[in-house]
Image 1 (cartoon, rainbow, N blue to C red):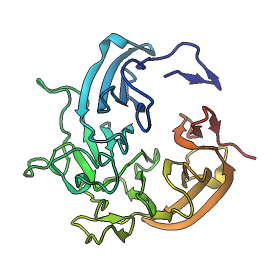
Image 2: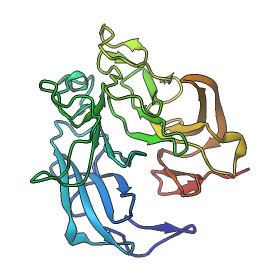
Image 3: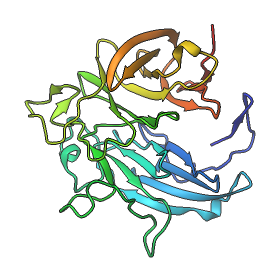
Image 4: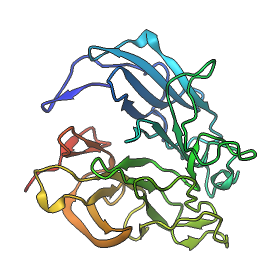
Length: 311
């Protein structure tokens, strides 16, 4: 991983984990986050055995110490796809990690609706160690002390939450969940809400039953969805809070890996008020980035990093 500044990519890597991961299929370096004080870097990736790992590294003066690696979380993956892996510092200072259902097709292990596993869930942890534990469970996690449910789980019923983000202005949570064979979905939780939400998979795909499944407990329908007539795999982005494109402010910007066209969705009180294409196409867009000024960047599998700007 390398630093990008002023449009220039640094020659030397900030951190090199190429000996710990693989770029095979949907595996590899999957997510990065930096602690609020800038003194720790959180790295989410697939290890050489194909399992999910979340590590923390000490940062001093902007320099990462490779020898400081501290394993926060280790999750076995039964298949090579749907690993998720995005990691984000929430507005509450807690660390959120999205994990897919474990892979294959149709969630054969039923992980999406099984709260005894971390798979198929959005996790919320405090990355500060406590006692012999590498992290602690934050106050407010919905399933603490609830039977066999894992206390790290914040929300569940997700197939592959490849990219999710918080609105930097409101704290609202947006989760783009990759669909199975029919629907791609965008899930939404207003700031302060969403604890314990069940987004339906594998009993539902978007707003539709999957394989005859009934609506589960705690089910929350997506705020937006589209069929595979319009794409194949959603790539979630951010709510735009920059200055360069004032007409776009407050809209959630996303795209699709296959279709490649940038799209925007606006909402009010959890209801969609407007959806539109932005008239911009990107070849195989796989992720977004948000600058400190709120401007957005799109990352392509071709290696390009593109900035949204007036035409």
